Length: 87
DNA sequence: CGTATGACGTGCA
DNA sequence: GTGCACGCCATAC
Image (tube, rainbow, N blue to C red):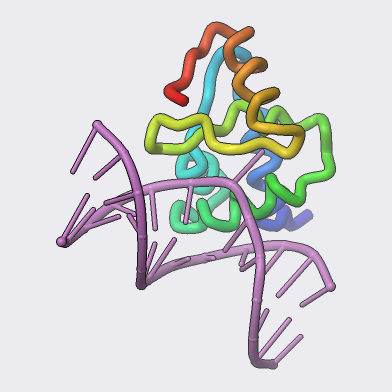
């Protein structure tokens, strides 16, 4: 079963423990292509799987990044986990 | 198959 | 410290 880069990214995000966050670069590296963080954002944006805690993926700049359901929702979710980001 | 897109990252002014 | 522009990879159409 060959997991495409997209599948690997989703799997990596699913592996993120509660209260922990990874950067798009980290996820891309776990997916097997440390230079494909660009595609990671694309995949998550087109991600239709609500089981993926994509809200635990943030930018490397220290910003929160974006979210399908609204950046505001992502901030709230992370805040509930005890993680405060720089808006 | 080729083009355009994307929730980014880094560098420079 | 902030803002702008370029570059990068994979996916979707």
